[in-house]
Length: 202
Image 1 (tube, rainbow, N blue to C red):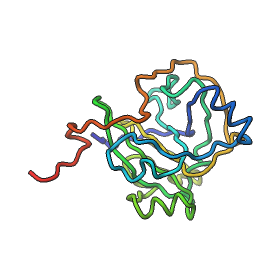
Image 2 (image 1 turned 120 degrees about the vertical axis):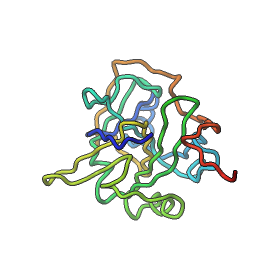
Image 3 (image 1 turned 180 degrees about the horizontal axis):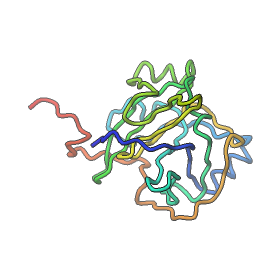
């Protein structure tokens, strides 16, 4: 499933409704606050209903390196430079691997600043990944600058464990559609998939 092909990217992005971002501006001082993760993904995942974080995406279109213009989560998109959330001072954890009766698979990763409450939570419960060498999401130093890559073959769902100020990025409206059918909110994992389920016993 994971071919090892990695695509470069430069921003993390979060799609939501216009009302969500208005609420953040009016009632939260322009700061997006972490919230409790829902029960999407694998049954019994240690992050479901336990970990607080903010959901981001980073997948890009393979032909132009840009985020897709469609989203299941809302027509408004907040984009933040990748280095604002992911650097050598950030720990990366693997949280889940699942599908929803479809051909493509999702991988949930957690980004937690070193020493943060989210980092302590994940260190006790999740496998930690080498940020410069893994099959999903990497941050490496090349010619003196940070270069970011994501796996081409899966859809990554990134949970960032700390508050994020809107002043760190740019908010705008996408030109594509809101594809509600692709939403993973409270999505249930396909228990029959032989790719993302581990066989126990005979």
